[in-house]
Length: 146
Image (cartoon, rainbow, N blue to C red):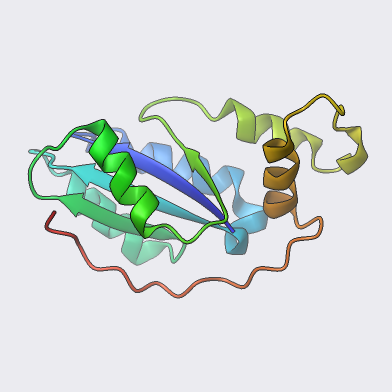
């Protein structure tokens, strides 16, 4: 399983769009990943948007710091609570170029150049099922008052 960590703060205006972009990109592989939204003490309605997304999509989970602790602590919270064998950090508001390149290449699994780092081959196998055999994880998280 792949864990995508999305640390956010005051992202109510972009969170829905960004999550939908990830879900669209991963649609064919929805049972092979989880998306953890880590709200780092937002003062806007970010957590409400995140909870709504968690209710709609079983592969999305939400974690929350009650006060801002910073991006590093948000990432560490995500790492502590993720289930994936491979973890990828998704930057708030950024495009997912690595995932997009892998998506374009999924029909050509032997086309990976040998000079690529090993983690990309492992990530590719998890994303697109070449040798992966992971069942979906149950959704059990509750908000954290860290």
